[in-house]
Structure formats: C-alpha cells, structure tokens
Length: 115
Length: 114
Image (cartoon, rainbow over all chains, first blue to last red; front, side):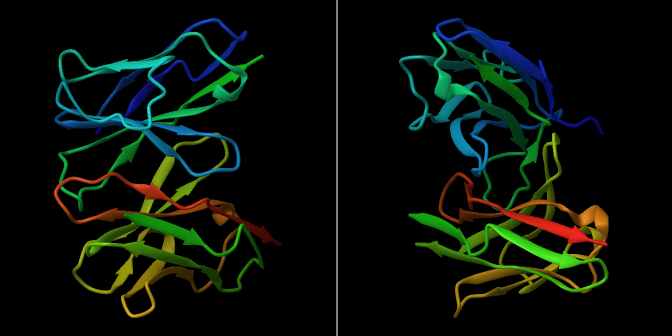
C-alpha cells in the first residue's frame, strides 16, 4: 500500500517569496492533516480536512498560510509571503476518518528553509 | 484540553540495555495514546497505540507501553536496545470526544552507544 506522498522534499527560498507544498494521502483516507515541525519541537497542527471541508484551522496563520483540498483527495499548502520563522518541516498526514482511535499516517515531510 | 509531557529531552543507553522513555498526559476525556518514532530526515512512524483496550500495548521492533490511568502515564519500554533504535520518539495524545486532534510531546532523543 502506498503511503502519504509529499513534494517537494526540500525547498530553499528567500523571505517574502512564496512556496507551495503538495500532499497525496493514502487512498481512501477521508481525513488529511498538515503539521508544522520546527527543529527541536514536536509537530504542531496547522489545518485538518475531512474530505474537502476544513475541520480545524485554528492554528493556521491565515495572513500568510493557506491550504486547500478541493476534490477531497490531494491537498496544497501555500505560504506567501514567507518569513524566516517559517523554516520548518511541513508534514502531511492522513487517516481513515475522524475517529480518535484511527492511526494517523505521516509522509516524509517537506523541508523548508527561508533565508 | 489535552497535553503531553515527555520527561526527558535526551536518553542515552548502551546497546543491549533496557530503554525507558517517560510520558505523562493530561486529558479531559478518556484518551487514545500513541508513540511515534522519527529517524533523521524521515517521516513519523507509528510504534504503538492505546485505544482503551488492553493497558499493556505491544508495538513494532520490540517496543511496548503500559497505560496507567492512576498515574496518567504511558511510558515506552524495550528490554534490549539496538543501534538502529537511535531516533527521536514522540508521545502523542488524542481525546476520545467527537473529533479531536493529536497533541504531540516535545520529543525524546534516544542515543544508543556500542
């Protein structure tokens, strides 16, 4: 079974530029998550989708971050304009549905460096 | 509200000796608890999970964890460390109330020496 796919794996941009990350969840998984992991910290949820609807985006910095999952399958996370503090790994994850006991599967992450 | 505290930022063991990574949680509802491992430049891999069934949970690669409600703990153990166990380990809580998100601890880096 294919896992969660993310691209690009690595990206270096200058501050104030924009960047987009793509995620394809495991087939059949209704719930998709974007997490931000800053070096030395645990992942922090940015946004959670159920199919094509947003369930939780309370911690998404909406002045610069946006995410969509238009057809309820793959998703894009965009940052515009980027700041130095956005340097982090952006992890996409998916689960079968919202049930709390379901395993959440993570992709390998997209590493962003803002210079 | 839910939270997780991993009591050690780093744990060092010798190969072949036991591993103990400590985790305490706080949750307003009965929780699901998970341990994930992250090897360098890799994504997060699930080691094991507790979802209100047996309190002693066995995971992959010889790891296990015991859910202790009275102590609000979910410590991760392994009888004998291997060099390949060197990685960062995250304890994670998720409340069993409607939907809820994962809350991660800050992680424990496990160092294994020969």
